Amino acid sequence: MKTSSIKIDLQNDGNIPNIPSIELFESWVSHALQSDFSQLEQTIRVVEKSESQLLNKTWRGKDKPTNVLSFPAEDSDYLDYDHLGDLIICADVVEVEALQQNKNPISHWAHMVVHGMLHLQGFDHVTDSEAEQMESKEIDILATLGHTNPY
Image 1 (cartoon, rainbow, N blue to C red):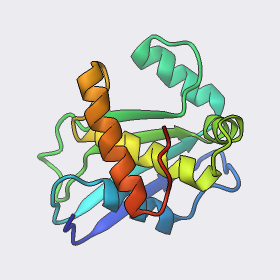
Image 2: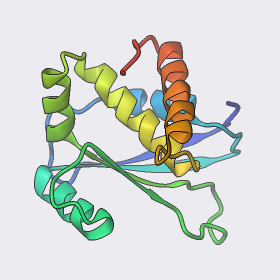
Image 3: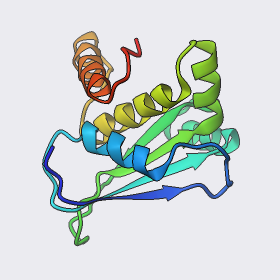
Image 4: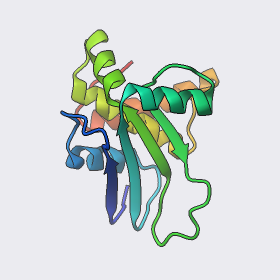
């Protein structure tokens, strides 16, 4: 997509070590965009299991940590930049999943960002047809980034 400016607000309040670089996050977000934006500011918060579990329980009714949560922006008309919403990524869950699924950790991080960004843009996987469409987009985007099919 043709977004002239992407700023990543990368939050890592727990000082979680070994997370991907800001440049990787920028690349993943950029490739996941389905529309053009003149100036996009994207919040990505990297969290520990306890925060992920609390947010997942509060907003989804699931009392366990999860890999990625997407919170679409409700009203960003008052901002002087585009903002799709917030991504919350649990570093521990992503790392464990990559190990358990025998995936390259960076590829799994890329998948979580792409997956979350598609959610922020209205994609979902509730029905089989939605899941097929979303997964197909994820596979295509990840391929352009040099990553293999995550499914």
